[in-house]
Length: 198
Image (tube, rainbow, N blue to C red):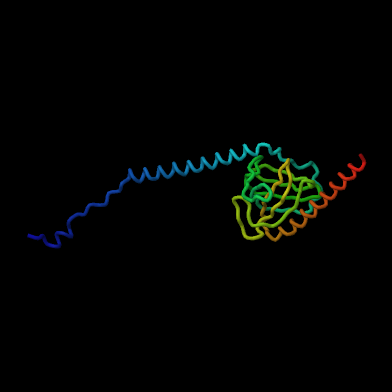
């Protein structure tokens, strides 16, 4: 005899069983994978730093840097081999992103980085500046980055900065290019005069 429908409705239903062991194993496997990827990235970073070990210590600012021509508050986004925006330079702390305070004088570019290594680019080492949209690991809108090109040791380096006020970038490009051209012309003239005197 078929039981009444009211009895069927009243019959208890078993709750779905959660496979906790399977879930825990899946989460643990995911965590192991994330840690492994992070470890690989860290090893790659350290290896890149080893390959760039010939980069000399970064110059520090002289006691008297001269009268400021321009100042800028913003962020330092990293450095690469000049002209190769994906070839990141990590040696000497240049791979560390940070806040940055820039000061340009007739003696060079002073880069102060809270929590990271400060450095100074002498005017004679400046090779120009331009606006760009990207540097290794950071892509912005067109003209969103101020790229300063300079020489250190036997390397030519592009360093990327972004001002808190992007409208400052063009004046920086103009000033750095003017200073680097002046310094290059002066150095060339002095070298020619020295050679001629021999």
